[in-house]
Image (cartoon, rainbow, N blue to C red):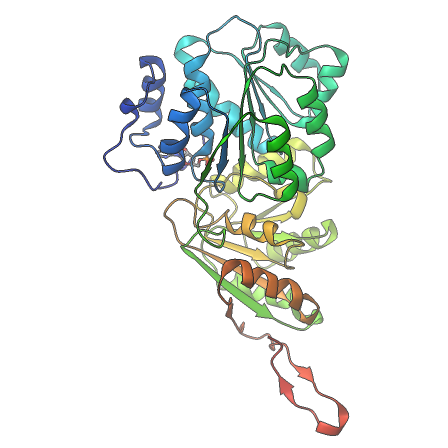
Length: 400
Ligand code: AMP
C-alpha cells in the first residue's frame, strides 16, 4: 500500500457492507482502514458486481483501484486459470494495483501475477507456473508473454483497462488492440480514464458491451482544491525561476521537465542548494526509479525531479506542489499532472513556468480549466516583458 493514505472524500451514509461483498473482502477493507467508499467506488462497485461493462471517468487518486479491484476479488476464486486482467500504463501503477489485489484476495488465496517491462522475465515465467488467478500487466510485456505462449488468457472473464488516456499518450494503442483481439469475446470490461479522447471513445465502442458511463471528473477536468499559477519569464530565466520557486517551498514537490538533461541539471543544482532531491527518467534503471519513488513517498527526498514520460501515472499521496518546467504538450497532460496534487480532499498548487512561445498552450489550458491561472512574479526573476516595435519605443507589455 501507499505509506500515507490520502484523506478521501467519502459517501456519507454508505458503507462497504451495503454492497454485495462477502466477508473475505470486507475483512481486507477493515485491514486497510477503509470504512466508507469514495464516490467512484460507490458508483462503480454495484454496476461491476452486477456484471455490467463500466466506463469510469475519474482522476488518479479518486480510489479507482479499489473500485475495480473489489469486484474482481469478490468474483473470483483461486485455481481456475487466469480470470482477470488489469492493463496498466506504467510499471509503477501496475505495482500499486498488485499490492491492492494482494490484500483484497489474501483470505481466499487469490493469486495475482505482475507482468511489467524493465525487469527480468525469468521470475515472471516462474510466477506464471504457480497458477495465478489475476494478471496485472503493462501492454508490451503482456504481448511478449502472449507471443511466447507463457500466459494463457482463454479463460478470461474480466478485463480492466486502467488510465486508458495515459496508455494512448504512451503510444500503447496498437498493443492494446492486439491484446484485446487475443481475449475471449464473452467477458466483462471496465475502462478507467481521466479524460475521454476520441481514440478512447473508439475503443469503448469497439470492445465494450453496452457500457454504463460513470463520470466523476470535476468540471474543467481538474480537482477543485488546486491553485494554478503561471510564471511568465524569459527563456534564459527559466532555470533561475525553478530554483527560486523551490527555495520558498517546504512541502513535497514534484518537478516535471521535458528532457533528461534538464532533469539531471535540476537534480544536481538542487542538491547543491541543499534540497533533499531525487530524479526519475528513462536512463535510470527500474530499481533506481523504484528507490527514488519510495524515498519521495517516505519523505526522505522532499523534491522529485522527473521527465514527463517517467512520471506518468506515479502514485504518490500528498504531493503539495507540482512545478511544470515547461507547459505540457497537451491539455490532458496538464490535467493529469494537476491530478497528482490536491488528491482526495487535499489542497495543492501547480506552478507552470512558461515563455511567450507557450502562449497558445496556456490559452488552451485556461479554457479547459474555465479560469485564468494566477500570474505570479517570483522573487529575483524578472517577469516576461515584450518590447514593442521601434517607433513606439520600449514599451513593457504583459504577454497574456
Ligand atoms: P487510487 O485512486 O486507487 O490510486 O487510490 C488513491 C488513494 O486513496 C490510495 O492511497 C488509497 O489507499 C486511498 N483510498 C482508496 N479508497 C479509499 C477509501 N474508501 N477510504 C479511504 N482511503 C481510500
